[in-house]
Image 1 (cartoon, helix red, strand yellow):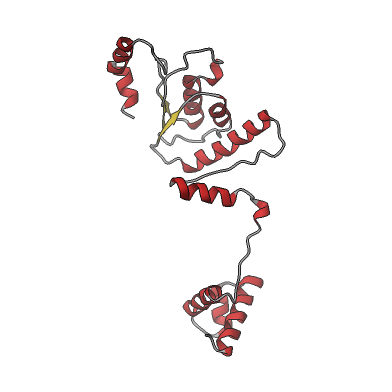
Image 2 (cartoon, helix red, strand yellow):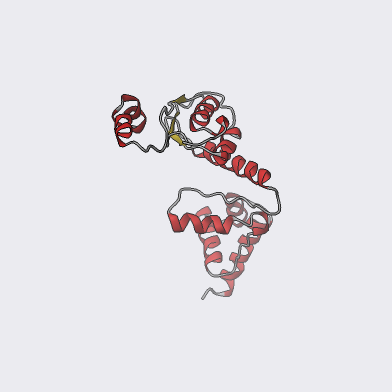
Length: 201
């Protein structure tokens, strides 16, 4: 247990640091003690409950859920978008915006980015910012095209090409469907040089 003098010093340092926004170096000069001592006493104040920090989750009500999903599934990052009472189109646009922001933040020069097809991926691609310079990205389809009717703007090739254009990257397109009934055609596609080039990524 800390003696009363230690507690008073911790409270004083915490008040200067958290309430008066002084830096640890400024506090060290004012009190005539080492900056490393300031850092150690601030930590001790938190550890012993003398200082408590409260985060107002009302500003991001999904933060707790994001952290739980990251831990449970071992994900690098998670963004949960609130649906509230918005219509489906608004929800899709918001999901696309947040997804595009996350992707842009995670991308590193030379990355390979895989795309599938559909409305959600289309919303993400639409919201990607126009790159100022090339990061040498390669955009590839991770699935063939749909077998049924699908608007061309949602097709995997459209989205892969559009994303590469926005990111100033290179794109490879899929000239084969996602599902095939004929195993001979399937095997032929898988043996083609084009398929091998894409699957190599």
